[in-house]
Length: 312
Image (tube, rainbow, N blue to C red; front, side):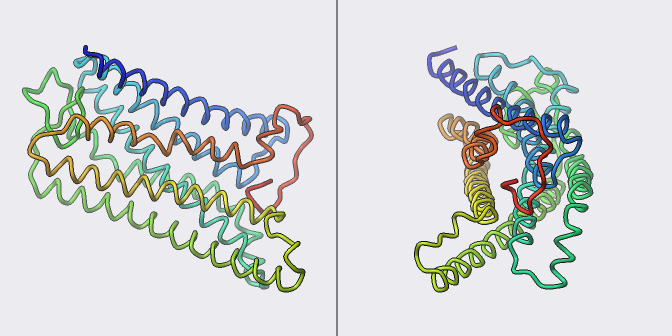
């Protein structure tokens, strides 16, 4: 193992530890909410679900990548490769579905009220848990093909570049099967990315329009930033923007790698590192932008009341 691999493995280890620590902290906060309030507020349930998905992605893919970077290769058999890749793919799908749910939830919350939308907002919390269950079912089904085509290196004569892993390989499959699988997964991702993008643009427009109305009616001293809904919406917009940026980067980098005659070690290493950036940064974005998180260890254990925003 050369110095480059050692440095890469060490940096990767620090990234995984940081990301897992942040996401586990969020899960502990929400576990505390359940133990004290005996329920989890709807927006908290979405954030807890996102933290769980991030943790699954970091552990299932991060640990094998670290071991591989430190020189280990044949440490996974067929079953190990299948189950870890399946967990990672499902966790990745859960992250995109939950981020989408987060943006749609907040877009509905900040929408100007009408009699019909007031009824929708009142029923919205009841839809959160079924939506999370649906996202699990959807991704478990969509990614069922992932373990079917992967095997351990001990049963393979060469590494298939299609999965870009040093510790697993994939069996030979037809070009048509690869194309159908790629199209189905891409359509799923594009649907949720598109939906969260529309919801985020809508929130930006609502916030901008409301900001202009507030300044016109109350003068420049009245800031929209004091509104809990606005703070929550801005945090959600930041989460969505972060996800879309890294999703776009991941798509472009993967396309480059798959079309290169030979894998570039530098591009491959940067792709592996950047693949976990959203899962690593996301919990700290929530923690740093939430006043409740900052005072979590100082607050008493009284039951919090739910406010119709993610700043509860």
